[in-house]
Length: 69
Image 1 (cartoon, rainbow, N blue to C red):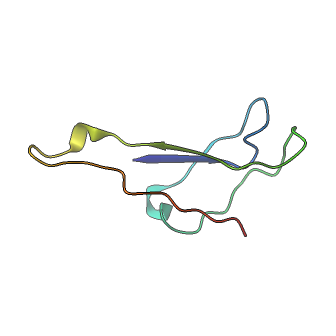
Image 2 (tube, rainbow, N blue to C red):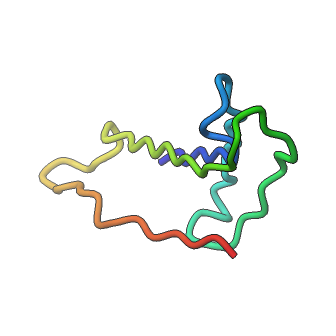
């Protein structure tokens, strides 16, 4: 699974940051400090690779939760 986040998602060219695997599901501090749009906006891109699903097993996405503090 790959998780990318952007703090400036409304910009014409958002800065996507890849969340390290060990921080998925943990606190992540954005590195982006600039924006060109009028407001900050959080964007999330989650990619799940099903190629590693063992034979006879079902893979599914349970959910996603986030908070901004």
